[in-house]
Image 1 (cartoon, rainbow, N blue to C red):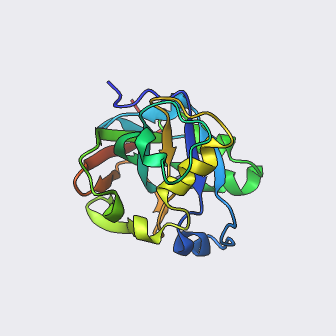
Image 2: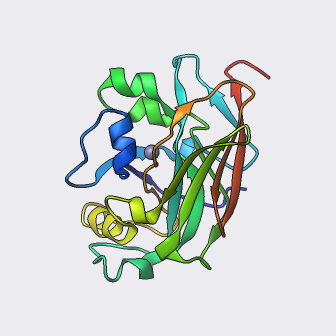
Image 3: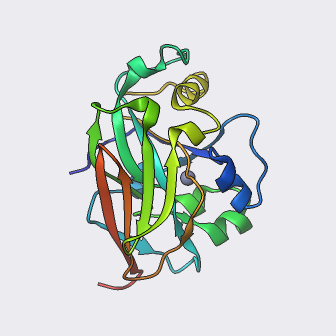
Length: 208
Ligand code: ZN
């Protein structure tokens, strides 16, 4: 059972300056948006499947924001009234295809490329949220809402002036520095202290 059933998954690229730099990208002047299909969702303990089309699949630990009620053209000041809660998310990305395709639909869209969970929490301190990424128990990423170029309320304002956000929609708010390649057998964890740990194993395509 998925903890979210979004009509759309809206993602923000390069929302942490250090991560933009590690990939050699400019700091964006406005939020850079893309989508993942709802078919990419998996829950805790499900397998991330490495597609044969990619030689470089990477994890991206992210703070996931779940919308609680319809939001259209809301202000940043009012944005948090439209939020149900926060969850851990992994914006799994075929980095090689992201670079060669020119747009990101394929690189971000494979089945199993959006692990989410283990719960949606509303009892959190939004001003001090942190996200931690681990592979096989070793910490690789650590980010804070303080490091976001565009804070969560600003993202909701920006996105909701483009598209109506429906209850259940999911916003992935970008990843901090420290992304890296996954291999079959790896165990990936995304933790948001106070929310929980999202844990997924990695396997190759064709493995049973
Ligand atoms: Zn991402």
